Image (tube, rainbow, N blue to C red; front, side):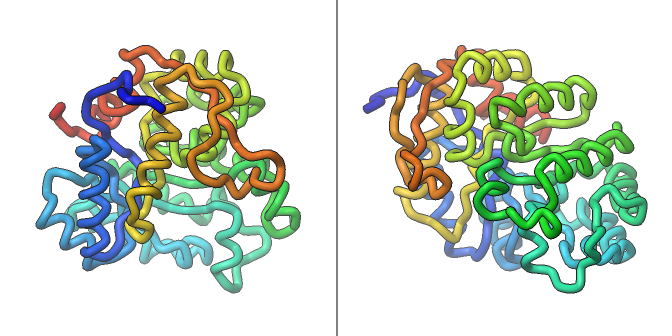
Length: 314
């Protein structure tokens, strides 16, 4: 057991989801006990958004979901109108989600839909013109493509998913992109490509959601993972992907604990403190800590997100 963590300052969770008002209260009560004092809240409820703005005015940087259905059908005008109002409504960034399984939820999508289609260029240009950062999820763990996305004609390959986002990045060097889940590339063999992205595109940052994905993949080669974290320490934000609709202490604490073990300690072959559905039938997931220096931990947990999203030190 770890009685005391190396890092003892405030935590900025740059990737959380907020829903109804009562669930927000529960989330923040738990997070306060885990030293989280600021967070990006991806909004799933208008009522929850208004409640959080009033009751917790200093806590959140709000992210507004852009309509997946409109984007999927190339219906750009409502999205552009939405973007134009976003800051005035109290949001600081926009969010889109294109994990491959989005096709399971939206009907009558063209089989050749691509996020780098010229038809969607007005949306990215509107984000750029309004200086509105975009939190954009594209692709999923390699394990998902092995277990759930075997229908390549429907979901594409992971490489195809990533290449579409890369094309968008090339066209919009002045738009800030927050790419969650370590750019969807925490797998050790993908860190080379992720490094190329970070070197080529100074306008992208990545976050560390989700805990099991980070622990599972980065623990596989401590030397390479640690070197990556050290080199790109100014570009990585701590994030959990936690949601208000799962508001229990066990749920929250286990995800925080997994990442803190990964970033702060030298543990070896430590079992992930919750079940990893991707590996439960193949031996489970184990954490090998990266033992990052305190200077890097300060950037990861607070300084990077606070700088980018203009939050003062607490």
